[in-house]
Amino acid sequence: MRAYAIFITAIKCQKHARIECTNSKKVKNKQSYSLLEAKKLKVHFLGLLRNVDSTILDVKLEHEFRFGQISEIEGNKFFSALENLPEYITAKKLSLDYHCLNFELHKYFFVENSFECAGRDFPHHKVAEFDNKLVHSYLNPTFRLMKLFKEGNINMPLKYYFTKDPLSSFMRVERSRYEYSEPFSLDKQELKDLYNFLKKYTLPFSLTHIQLAFENFELSYEIPNQTVAFLVLMNGLEALLNPGGGEITHRISRNCAVLLGSDVEASRKIYEDVEYLYGLRCAIVHVAKKVRIKTDELKKLRDCVREALRAMLDINKDKNRALEILNEMGFGEFKT
Image (cartoon, rainbow, N blue to C red; front, side, top):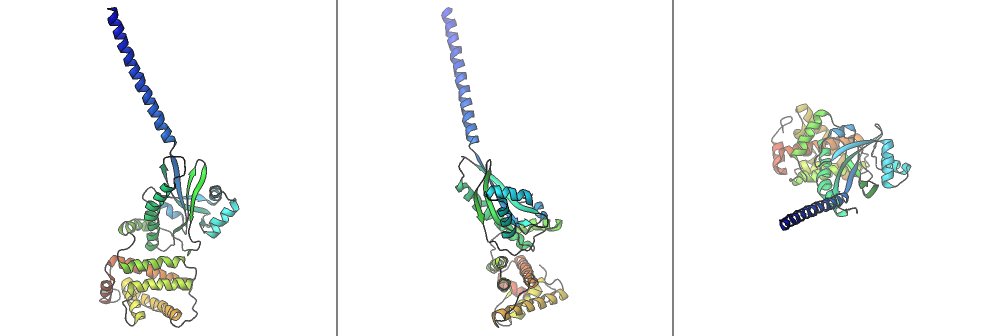
């Protein structure tokens, strides 16, 4: 009987030991898991915007990107700490060199995101992956399409990758300082139309003449010389509406008038405007006259190219077929 009791006690001790061992393993596994969690690094992305106002905050983006704002005073402090520069130098850089400050609202507007990765060292490969997959492949094309949707040169001249604890910038990317400062703003109806537009189109465009015209349209924003920017825009209009052959001024003007005119009177006005603008182009290129392109003339041509691009996207035919359709119609007859 005594031997049996000893045997039972031994069994219970073994069982208790196994339980203790199991619990010990669980604790160790939990500790290991906690250590792995602790080693995760949160990397923040922030892109500073220019030529926008507070209406940009209503735009919802995909892939967890979101728009935000910060006051001029707080922004100067934050970016000064981020770049490890004196505040007055940072303020000059952001407001005067890169035109990121909305002077009317005294605010900086930005787009932000974040991601986590294992380890405590800055993961340059993960940043490159994020930049390629989400910034270059999604965010930048979205801004490009927004410029095509409506007048306004929304762009992102500065972007940062950094950690917050401690605040430290590991990567900063800058682009050209010069940009045509045309503000981008939306009302509520335009916001709904913008979402439909972004869903409908992707870059690059499949039709060669439309993509070529679009690239010229974009390039015009980045050229300081307004005369050269004007010629680049006219190249875009020709890529869309010049069928080749003679009477180029008349044929481009007519095609544009048919394409964009809502009625006969509107078409006639468009014809006169494009004829005048193309005449300026000929004076610059062929006669070598010293023509000074005015800001309103540049804007009028850019608006014309934008609307022509959108209309040709709706037609969605190769260039020859699209121009045949326009040639078969009179002023005020074309409807997309």
